[in-house]
Image (tube, rainbow, N blue to C red):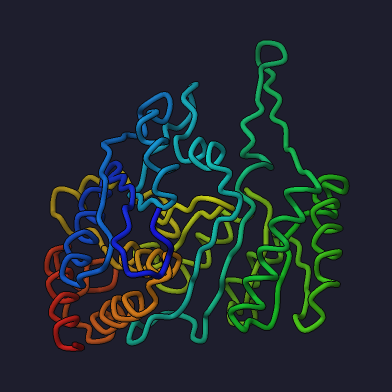
Length: 342
């Protein structure tokens, strides 16, 4: 495999996904070509209705180490497990990272929002350990381990250290789940002692949600167990500008999958698909994260500057940002901005 940063083109596995997925992943492919980014895509048609992740897809991700993914719809109820969760478990993508921040020129209710939500991705309520004890009684197990809790805490503090962040806040419900969330907190406290230059806070998840919608600017890096992180990340995304503009990724020791940071149900929005008006901003910014991960920082900076420049200009925005542009019109504007910035 080529050494990262040596300029050799890198293969990236591409999952167009369901709903708006093919629209926004197609937008990324088009912009990457215009950027002349040193990546090429191996696409696999996968849908959330499948029972399990195809072997050839897993082989491709294991070979390429990096994947870009559109949304995969998760059936509600029934016996079909989420392919999103399967991918995280199979590849041990233990950290979900969502960056929620104010975009230049985009008016929101709160200013100075710049939150990174780092969520444990492999256990908790998402472990999928459910069974029917007797008819009409279902037991769902929440699994918390010291190993996984320490691992995500280390990732959060290391991220804060490397990105010049000042504070890490652990989100929990240890006042009720004293053993499970207590173990998570205990692990975070132990790791925090090794980073004296970073302030460490703790907040109960219900108070956290209230504080997020009233004073989000107080938060910096947030580290959470699995379920809370999903709720906190989507709430923070809504505060900072919506799910259509927030980038994210799922990262493990060996592999990484980059995707829209917060989905909140827009994957299956048929109206967006029919009108071709899905917002590609989030996945374009996630692609910039991917380029940095691949150690192509100059390409990442150019892409990010072009995308943020289009948002700031305000002439080409999709409906969720108060405009009327189609996905393609936003893509064309980003490509034009890239050409202007050369």
